[in-house]
Length: 509
Image (cartoon, rainbow, N blue to C red; front, side):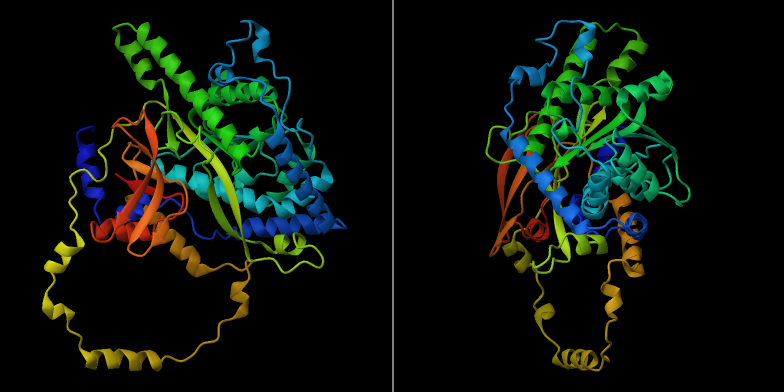
């Protein structure tokens, strides 16, 4: 099988489908009809008065949390991030968590939960959907059956899981300490068909006590918009270590796209990679020559599925920039109704949700050939030299006929109801099915040959400038942050792709 991988990669990555394999960003996302209807039904049954005021109060509270995070003094040093147990005595107290999320000064009660469902849940869903969709694209054979959602809230990540893997989910464990959030999540999924087995817990400790050791390993563990609400860095690292122990394959962490959110993701990324490298070194040092020990050694370790193309130190940690992405979504009717304050101008029909994330997988990063290896590109001058002069001639009679046919097309007035976000667009659904079929045949591998476009490309004239995080060696153990300029004259094929690349897409090397 290993000998067939290079040949398959060479067949897949051609100039024609290179763009499809590199595409990871999503255009303006429309929240699924089922979720929109569930939110409207939930808010209608509550009949909460002064919802606009509650949404505004929730927004102010979340902004206050951002200010607290920005001003929070980090009392631990860099050595603690790399080894949180270095300064702690080796005793049972080292795993004791002294704080949990919500201790930063904000708790979700009934009013806050209702405001969250009306204003924030669609945006959080869009970020989780964007992340999980990329995990599915990068891991085509990955279909999780057992999932753990830590900090589940009202179920934004669960709804995203249902959209990305609708058939494979068998059991989902939810960890959420807020009882009002749990009630809202149960109310939103009420009446849904073909649901997996769902269990809710107040904490990780309650989860581990309630299930057997054989059931503690999950195919996928996700923690979205929760780690930043844990004030202590020690507790944050301890919880992530526990989540990593509860997964047997993939761990996904998602945080808001702010400097604090990126710092949380970067710290957890560095710690898990360091921890697994240390375990791998110890296992190699103590390994025997038996085949059983050899298999155990091959399964140890961890690597980044997305967004990082390498497993080395993040090149943005010592700069003023921070790695984050954006997902645009069409605002739901509840967002348009409650997020607009009296006297303010009308809201836009969309909003941009910024987020930072990282997806880990157990094992070693697969060794793949780089997508541009063996590919030859012509310059613009060489392409012009091969043109046939007859192809440049214009048949004016055919051109006039095409113009007349276009003028004879009758005008059709578009039904205004089709612009309503609460109406299902069948054409868009069919298009999504076609895109999913295309994704299965053209997906980027996990080798180090794919860089990540960190910020929006700058298009000026006939050249495109992109800021790319890339791997600097074949095995993806080290990386760097580079500015790549693609010109039309030197490489028109890649220039055509660069013009259509968006923030968050991959770039081949």
